[in-house]
Length: 108
Image (cartoon, rainbow, N blue to C red; front, side, top):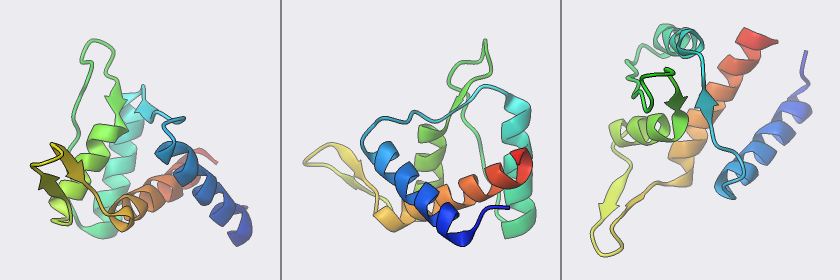
């Protein structure tokens, strides 16, 4: 089992690498995503939607999923001047913690 320190280190590295653009989240297996979302719905009582980017291979890019969840949290705003989404770090952090926690429970 992972120690709390190991998990914290892993999450910090994950956030750093994701912010730097070095990690591109992908679920190539739709069944895996469905397990994760089912678990999220069961634990949180919230509904999560998925967006298929490439229907031919059923690839899901979680960047769109993260934005979708952040938009639903009502903490994201559209900056018309810069023409981009403004996402508070805590919104992404909340979502990534859930995803990583579920990933560790499902695959380890």
